[in-house]
Image (cartoon, rainbow, N blue to C red; front, side, top):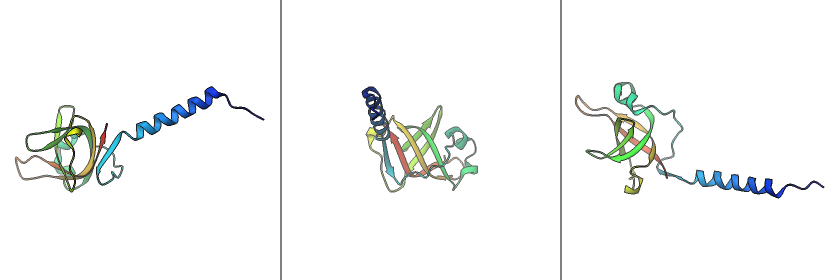
Length: 122
């Protein structure tokens, strides 16, 4: 009979625990994300009409902005409006991945991502 090394077995258990711990550090608010390819926030802001009324995914850091929530990627900040859910204050300052439709208002009105779902990395 073949006998496995206790060290190998221990490493496999540790690796499994590490993977499950990493997977449990993401919280979902709203609907599950669909797995769209992320668009940089700066790209969305540079030509919002290109993404108007389309489903998009953006990623960055969540914060409170002037009129509500924002998702910040580098120097670019996009207004975010959760649709049918809210985000706790404890999610501010953490990594967010959001999907939803981009709403582009009239002249002088900033674009807003109407988010159907947000994943918060803790």
